[in-house]
Image 1 (cartoon, rainbow, N blue to C red):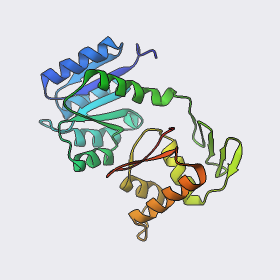
Image 2 (cartoon, helix red, strand yellow):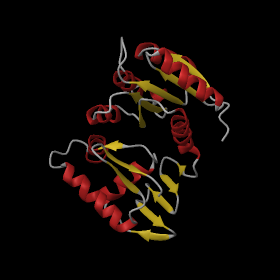
Image 3 (cartoon, helix red, strand yellow):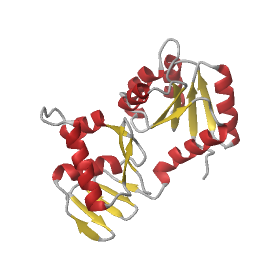
Image 4 (cartoon, helix red, strand yellow):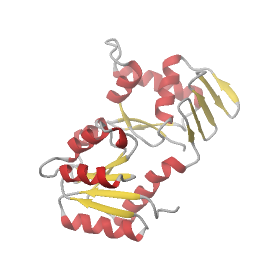
Amino acid sequence: MSTAKQKILIVDDEPDILELIEYNLKKEGYQVFLASNGQDGISVAKKVHPDLIILDIMMPKMDGIEACRLMRAIPEFKNTFMVFLTARSEEYSEIAGFNVGADDYIAKPIKPRALVSRINAILRRNSSGEEVSDNKVEIGDLIIDREAYLVYQNGEKVVLAKKEFELLYLLASKPGKVYTREAILKNIWEDSVVVTNRTIDVHIRKLREKLGENYVATVKGVGYKFELS
């Protein structure tokens, strides 16, 4: 994969962490930019327009959660990959990160090879063979046509209920991205007061029954993501 033109912004208040990640990503061919807190991270991001942003959670001035939330509200960062880097392994911090739009989560202590491999994989998501347009997703053996509300698997039509289709389209439009239950409820059911987490579980089960177990993965304690096994 050519990484020469891909830009990565690292936002962390620990100089040793910045230096370690910068060194390893530059070796991989990425352009790397640095910031030491969330406020500076937003300023740098606006100037360099990175392809991916690595954010620590606990930082002075502005933490990573708030910085991610603010950047997701800016149209130019709507599709920028954002990855949290933190020593806090508690489930609630992961959920908080995904709730504000994080694409992935990497725990400290950092293992350079593992980190680089994860970053490479994340940046490949847009070039992994899936074709995504406003109305259609083609990935693996699936064609998901939003305009016609049709799904084909290996050329065979698969009949889905309306909400099953919308849930599949949401997940497949961003392979690998973890959607929390809250994000799924907001995107699919909006403000319906009769929908519970159990409703999501039932729809996921129905999708697996109709398409097989290889597409929708459970991220324990957080939510669901689309992936090709």
